[in-house]
Length: 210
Image (cartoon, rainbow, N blue to C red; front, side, top):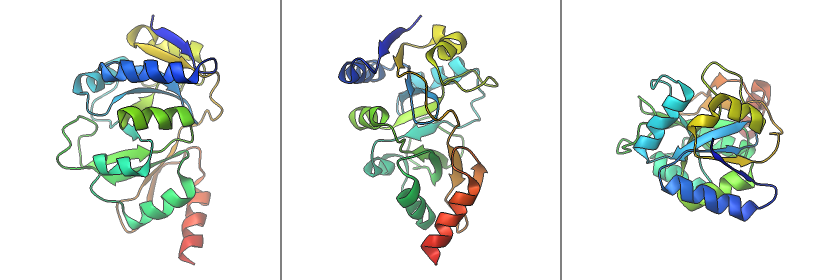
């Protein structure tokens, strides 16, 4: 079983332990503003391959990237589209994953095409963790085809024997995955309607353009 550390008892200790494990190429699970996430450093190839093994997931399915600040977008993507700029203003930090163009020189198996999903979560722990170790290759902390996890016992039941550290933050308040929006073209495409309803997304864009 993995080491478990209670975020509610010691924020800084949980942060330091997470940084240590990630920098060693390990895998951690932590609470986000939506569901529990499974993560590695974005440039640790072996650790990213472990994520797919832990999930039982086909490697044709891309991993998302969690970042701590807007400057970290440059590490992953060469540019920010006009639509992305608008949505960032309204929905980051928050439960929206935006699809960007991936940097061509990025040598890490995050996706099989030139796109990458990026998000700044509305969660101080994940933001500070990303700022300390860099972008995080992330997916939901569950087996592929199984329910998302919002509690530690659910995480341990599904993948507990395959990870290095679990940060226990109690039950996740969201419980619904992030909405996924492709921002690369002139018109956005909502690929998954998650925590943010599509009507709210379109309404914010319409308000901006009016």
